[in-house]
Image 1 (cartoon, one colour):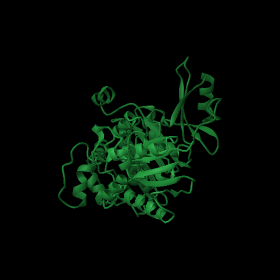
Image 2: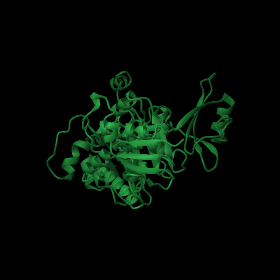
Image 3: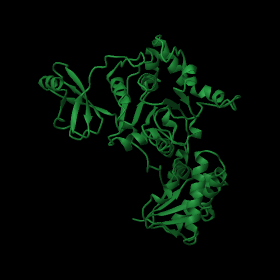
Image 4: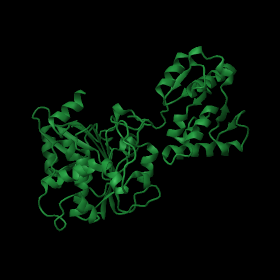
Length: 440
């Protein structure tokens, strides 16, 4: 059945291509949404870029017909720009006025009044608008084109029951064919074979090209003083140190070691093995709580408060490594002076080509899917990208645990041979941090 979809501004700011993702249905843009986009269009950030993109799309469609009557879309649907004056009289007294949300509801009521046999759906990422629409008897939905079921997010590993004989043979041969029930393993997915009776276990990793499971050897050497404390950290270090895997995503709650493992692996690959020219570290500039305002100094001084968690991890690693490295390097500042470590704000990454670098993007859960795409398309020849973050700790008001760039990337890349993912579950920062992450 054909439906009328009334779009909120936040949907178009989140995904400018949302106009074309409703198949052969009718898309209605309230005029107040056009006005709100006009307010955003001059912003020098991703929201401004998205607002300008939507305006260009609508202006291009205007050449195909009258927007008030409806312009045909390639998918067979129709796009219309509508006023809410007809439906304003249908709003209850509590919702009257010039509030943008109420005008969007007025457009929805007007559309329902014009065609009572055509269902009307308000699409918004604003929870309160969806509640008000539902109270008016209008169907309301979140925009779910790029949403991932966070409770079913790919973990990057699975446990498979196995007998003691099978585990012994796996250790002896160092590989095996996927057993029954595990034929659907993704490339680079990790496997825990466990015998319930003897508690014997073995760790393996799926080889997508050969359709085999390779034994994961014990990690005998530390990585810049870091040794895995649990099986998930073992998986993470293994995939981080594999140069054939060009994209690694690490997700997990606070204190699980995501950033520390990524930094340690990056230092091993750049400073010790020289497999990459340098390690480039970046993170979104988003405050938790009220911002402090403008910071004095040059770019490096302005970035220092935002990048301090990265510096803390590097200094923590240097605490494990009193041996002289790179002619006596003792801290992150000397690494930066030698060109081994570079700090880059994501603000200036568009248009760059970054070859032969180990790229770590921390707090990636605060990025939108489009921003992650922008970052990944910057990776040049022989570069590796590591995205770390906690999908449940989000400071960006325009994404949530199911629509952020980290979750989206995990789901989209889980079947690709050049990518790997590990969900870290056990906190190792301190007993207090682990307890706080679990009970608060």
